[in-house]
Length: 109
Length: 113
Image 1 (cartoon, rainbow over the protein chains, first blue to last red):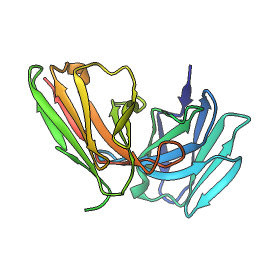
Image 2: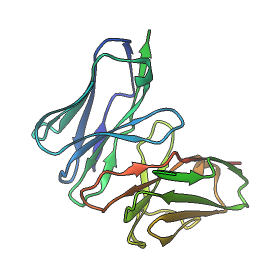
Image 3: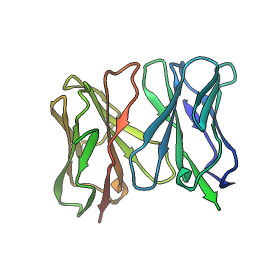
Image 4: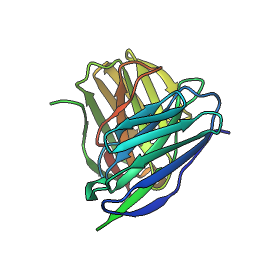
């Protein structure tokens, strides 16, 4: 079967760095997405990786290793507003998105 | 108004009621999606429409009935729901099916009593 694994919950301190991991086993691979979802709000697109390596976008970076079926989202200089759930999703060979259950990130002052 | 909008934002219904969820996208996209999001579970894809034609129905019970009158509007008609259908129902859209990022609406929080 197809599976996306990510930690259920993580806690970090304001101003620090946190890395949220995602491992996947899917039927084929056509890209990996990270979305941010604040409580009660819509998921919003953060990043897309289809080739191995690191993609940087301001305070957020996303890394992909296709051979290892692994990605991480790196958040730097954490702010209180970064408290949210972070969803990892992989597009499989049929171009369907397979979603992880999300990682709830709690930022403490 | 921009982006993807959904109404109502909250809905409480009994098991014998009939209600409809509405989604509208203002992005000029051609594909629209219905997802179910339950607590601590992955998003579950329910239906996909591309150019108003349904392309996916992921074994969704018939008590959920989608309707896509045009590329900008998507409905989810609900009838004789069960308490386990209580969840957040998210609508999303994308320019196309295969390589495009999906943009989500804020969802309808549904409670079935």
